Length: 242
Length: 311
Image 1 (tube, each protein chain N blue to C red):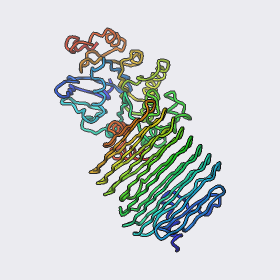
Image 2: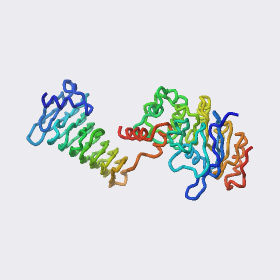
Image 3: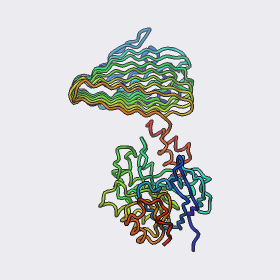
Image 4: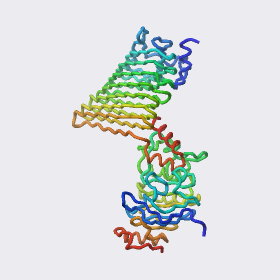
């Protein structure tokens, strides 16, 4: 078995005495699409911020090893240079920065027009637009995905990548995730949309800060659909590796 | 080298090419201190400017219906470390006329110098004026600049102003612009400033929407570093039905800089509306982290965000 790309062990994170992530273990392999399902407030986005190294998201205990390196010792941009990146659920807006610039950040030779086409946006219409509040939520989401694609990361954390995307276009988002995998990226796919999660190679269910189920996506989705964990404390449903 | 030549050679520092002064299709005025060192008019534009011991004084009129294809360049400044420059200008854009003015204010070696501009602007019905003003005050911080303008925007007329001071030191800058807008008129005022060192910036812009369906926007972007300070006041009043105004102020503060924003909105008609937004603080954390998550070092990310805001 190949060495894991990302390995989290016994990860615990609290805010003001409230445990958000509770002794969390998770392993993601190279080029693996791993879906992380969970109800609102289960800790999905917190995990994404903690992995990326966002300010205020340092765990109390546990380890995170990424590509053989202790991730927790590094600032965000060093994690990015190792090949980790994050697409935010609500992406930032930037005054005065064009889509073209945003898609070529630090990447000489990047082809922003091609990247835009991969997320279903017309390059003639979008390359010279600003990444500011004039973009709709759906447009901004696609551009966020395009910037992740352009980076060719080892692991992309996608936090609700289909949020704000119309139902008819969800297949395009799914294709983007497949393209990431095809270009050699692993994906931690944070979602509560089952349709998106079905493309994963593996899935986990997060409940009250704990991984309560990891395994075949269809089984995890079925369990998530049953909403068995929505109201539990993470203890009753157990920690079940199927 | 003559005074004129010295000054003209410095024009690229504010984005103006000296060749424009030789182009017969382009109107211009070059004022050094209280001397007019070069001027040219074009058909449809009357330039009546005089030198006095205390000021350059005069009137610029774009005649009714004339739409000038090329911008008028106003180049003012001092090529000396000390001195004063006063400009008293009446700018008239008559009915249905249209003109773009590029104002270049250049004080490249100022150490204890002063520039005062007192302007009245009348934009006639259906007319349009775009006034872009770029300043360079040199590296020493010894400049005091006091631009004042009173602007009347006529019925269905359009006024756009854009003030920028993005490189070198500001020194002490006190801007006071007051704009009145008649029925169906539009006024958009944008100011972009980068202050550092011990720069002091006071910016007051007031838009009074007097007419029905008149519209106004005051947009300010200020980045402050070191010990610079700024006080930004944006006043918008709406007096008639359908008038719409917005004040949008963003100030980024770094180091020990200080900033304040005072948005004042006043609505005197139930079918008028004025909104405002003001944000003061450090660079947006999410934006910074997003750029870092794409591999930019913190200082690179801050530089990109700041340069974007001031574009």
